[in-house]
Amino acid sequence: MKKNKKNWFIRLISILFIIFIALFIAGESGFYEAKVKRNVALTDEAIKQFEEDILTGKEVDIKKYLTTEDKDYSNTFTRAGDKMSNIVEEIFSGGITNVWEIFKYLFT
Image (cartoon, rainbow, N blue to C red):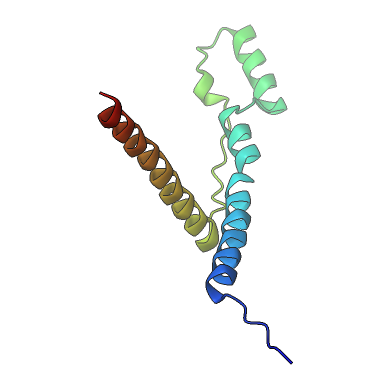
C-alpha cells in the first residue's frame, strides 16, 4: 500500500490564504458602519430642536445638532488581516512598478 505524501508547504499556503480571505472580509465588513458614520444624520429630536431654534431666531450651528458615535470594531484578527492586505498590496504595486522599469530598460 502506497502512502500519499501531502505537500505541507502547499497545505500551509492554502490555509494561510483562506485565513487571509476570511480576515479581509471581516475587515471590509465594517464598510457599512463607516459609511453610516460619514453620513451622520440628524435625529428626530435634533430636527425638532433645529426647527424651534430657527423659528425663535436663535443662532444656528449645525455642529450642535449632529450626533456621532465612534465604534471601534477592530480586534487582533482584523488588524492582522489589514496588515497582511497592506503588505500584499505593497508587494503587488511594487512588483508592477519594477516590471515596468525592466520593460522600459529593455526596450529603450
